[in-house]
Length: 68
Image (tube, rainbow, N blue to C red; front, side):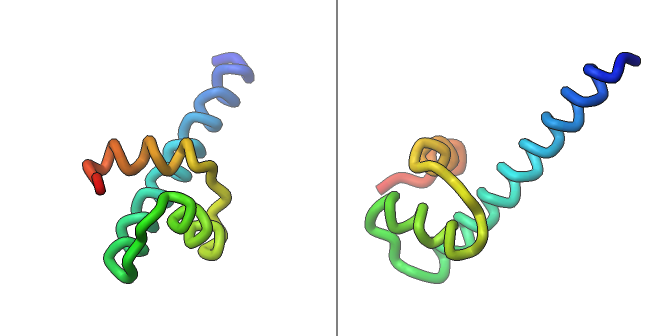
């Protein structure tokens, strides 16, 4: 196995772990408080130490089946 292949695999695993953690935190935040805007959710995730963009949150909400 080439070093590049191992590196690419590690990045994929890390990205998946970040996404999974982010989505779990989104569910916890939404259960704990009323979120009326995605910007509020982005800020709450940042307050929990998760750096995220609004675009990532939007995709996560869609994947989780969460709508207005």
